Length: 185
Image 1 (tube, rainbow, N blue to C red):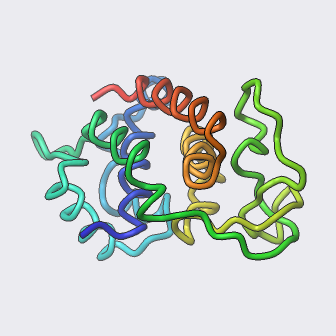
Image 2 (image 1 turned 180 degrees about the vertical axis):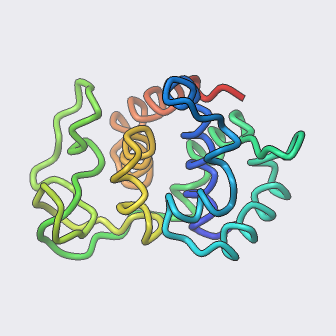
Image 3 (image 1 turned 120 degrees about the vertical axis):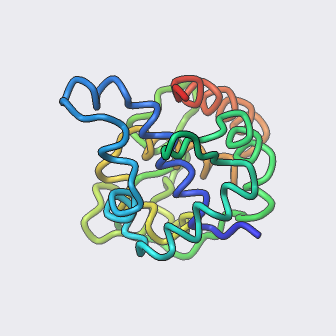
């Protein structure tokens, strides 16, 4: 059975493959940053839990291993995010305050959707926004998103899928599909 951190781990692998060109330009290879240790450092999830998570993701067919590298199964990840996560990890609102903007309040997302007022934020005292607290699908989402633009955008879209209205869901699904198209496996 999948756990909330499994979604974050799967998305981090997707992010690595979506950003392969930037890695190559910086002189690094995908194998340099896809080790369990690197994923643990990027997500602030323990090394042992990353290992267990990858095993669950492989048995769920969201990741697969080939030539000692771990690859995301893009279509399966997309299906999980679009059709399953809203039921498994529904949105939970928990107050108001300072945090990292998410949902349509994420400044990296550009669409015709108007951001709600008050906006949604992941609770974080160093965050640049203020609004209604939305609990992320895993406690490490805000940390992992700070250093990964692609991951931040996708996690913000996932929050829309977890708690948005029908029109918002339709637009978020399209945007998420486009983001996942860039995952080169």
